[in-house]
Image 1 (cartoon, rainbow, N blue to C red):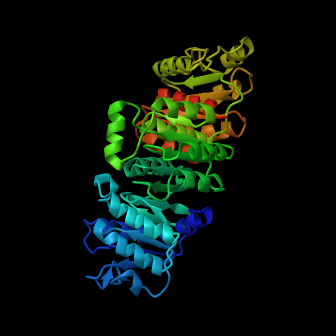
Image 2 (image 1 turned 45 degrees about the vertical axis):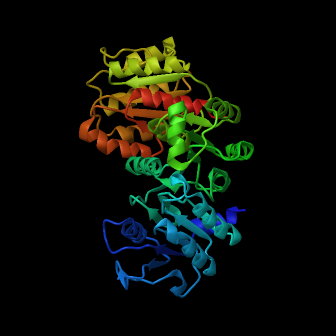
Amino acid sequence: MITREILASVFLAKNVAVVGASENPDKTGYQVLSNIIDGGFRGEIYPINPRSNEILGIRCYSELLAVPEDIDLVVVIVPAKFVPDVMRQAAEKHAKGAVIISGGFREIGNIELEQEVMQIANDNSIAVIGPNCQGINYPPNHLCATWPLLTSQGAMAIIAQSGTIGATMAGWAEEDGIGFTSVVALGNKSGVGEIELLDYFAEDPATRVIALNIEGVNDGAQFITMAKRALAKKSVVVLKPGRTAKGAEAAASHTKSIAGSDQVFDAVCRQTGLIRAEGIAEFYDYAKILGLLQKPAGNRLMVITSSGGSGILAADTADDLGIRIDKPDGATIDALRAVLPNQCVLSNPLDLTGDATARRYLDALEVVIQSDDADAYLVIFGDPIENAAQMLQSIRNKTEKPIIAAFLGGGEVEKREVPLMNAAGIPVFPTPERAIRALGALLRKK
């Protein structure tokens, strides 16, 4: 049984050995070792390669048994046929965990080889992540045993069977300035899987939302039990591809996952409160908003925009999702008329028109947050609005209702302002439709 305590020893490892470390910058063994170093890992690092004396300025050892101390975490990047011997040596060095990046196991039919590896791991209580995976990244311990090198710490735990999906999510989170608590690439998930990781991150105080990408569930009953337990403490967003017959066939060939009935899985999501995304962009958007905002008290939305066309798209999407776009009451209209120019369209969406400035947004928002016309606000910046982030931060301090934003058509100004908003806890989306769909996910939160 892989316990929470064993997983803590993996993520909070005090030393790491990289078996298959390489001097060749084109090799995965070089990239992973380099990222562990450049990511700022503060413990001892042991490159293992019998053909090198030193790699990246660090003494290299011929094998694990030559390392002068016990090892917490072993990262394995050698051909599959050598992995059993590496695991035996890891057991002798009392390793707590092994991240097996090496492929060539069950996914290509080498079932017995994978079983041999897992037998060694199970006999010695070694937590195996993988094999055939892209590694792990745990910023709280400055441990980037994967690629690319990403270091921003936030509140999103990313558990991904696909290494590319996990890396994409983490990359977007770093670009947005919201960071992540972890990226764990499951690969074949022959050892540690979604059950153990849901249990671990449900108890992690730094994690507010768990983003789970899986291609199949090994134990449906246990998954439901653990999902309910996690959902009592965190929001959980799920991306499970293989919804169609062709997709399920592709999942089976990728990691030999058994996708199961998509209708059954969808029903489980609805019954438990798991929020399901259908694509990577939705997966990220949903995790982002759930990690930053509390659920609104109701489903009434006020849209404030400088782009009339964007406002219409927001209204269409909201209507599709059953989110109410109610007109402001007469008193609110009168108060807006007193502070806004004549060309503004005083309705919902509230169109401030293309010459709007941050000051005009501020004047409008200070009026609408005083009314009881909405439970949440979507602020659309459809132009290069300077000081938009500073303005929204001042408004957020005056209301407890959620504020989300969409920024598009803003050029260089947009590139500067968006990370400031996200870092301040105001989720920003590149289109009004994505913003509304993310709000829809927030409203589905139990």
